[in-house]
Image (cartoon, rainbow, N blue to C red; front, side, top):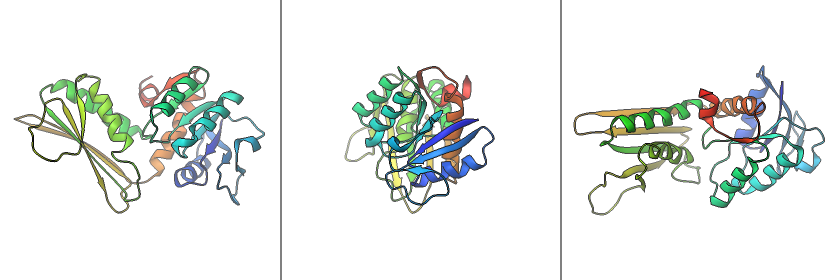
Length: 247
């Protein structure tokens, strides 16, 4: 049974991970850590310094600026880490890569297995239709601070593996012909949408549309727990959803 420390346990996604762990047959909640920790029906601390029992994995659903302390703790105690937070800048991403030299780190912009498959299918479709125009449309709730979503950028990154010269076009305005090298990315922010991602692969004669819709935040928590069980048995290194799904 994999013992999990949930960082960001007082947040919406952290709380969802805690809830899903109750039903898990492969993992259990060791404790939570959150600066806003209050009265909880499980051990929840304000900082890592208060944790006395070593977890097998830290699952991080907090905020990108806290990544240093998350990885410092994981490296100090020698446990694996699942980084489910988004919005990292280059320096923070580099810190994650450096930590992976010392501990197993699972890092994904989206913890949904379905989204990982969507990105993979989009890459395969882009390879099959090398002349197609490709556009990505993502929609989220109106409280999401970043745009485009980390998931949309992850899908674009996957497509660039088979189109190395492609570049992102974030939105579109003004005059000018569309370049064949563009991967258009468009962000919608409306009401309480959990998450929708569509990829359009269009030629002059046909169109393929790939779509993933998240109905409940629980799918991200389920993916994070599955990732924790996977990475807990791995050697130090950087892992992602494709490693988990296909290996």
